[in-house]
Length: 168
Image 1 (cartoon, helix red, strand yellow):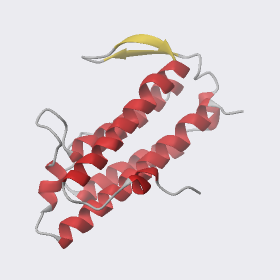
Image 2 (spheres, one colour):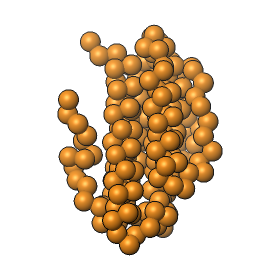
Image 3 (cartoon, one colour):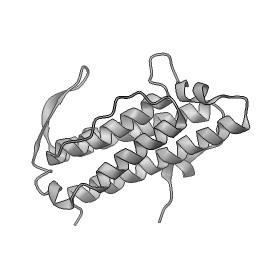
């Protein structure tokens, strides 16, 4: 039987490892082309969307803060000041380290735990299972898919296989 832990930590760490590879691919692309690192870090799909760095930051925030909401554990806080691939890699690594350090037992009551969202565009209360399936995971994957789209738009040769990551 799948647990809330099974549905959360492995999915989030896997997605973050894909994002880590995207940052590596962006760095290689910047080194191999005339496109600079700064241009790729700041690239966006539309003027009203976050740039590539913002997508990485939101995927990080979504995962660590989501786990915090589900478990009651305190999540680390990051300042959203990353402007280089090294800094983005570091942020992803710190996020994964936090997630991997969350004890499985912390998710014991997560499905029933009340989660309250208070964002400008999303407010409301729901149980942990609804939060995980209707907000946390869809929002997390949105930012990874958007980061993917930004890099494709900037000429990187990444595809669906890269988005899916290793299938082991």
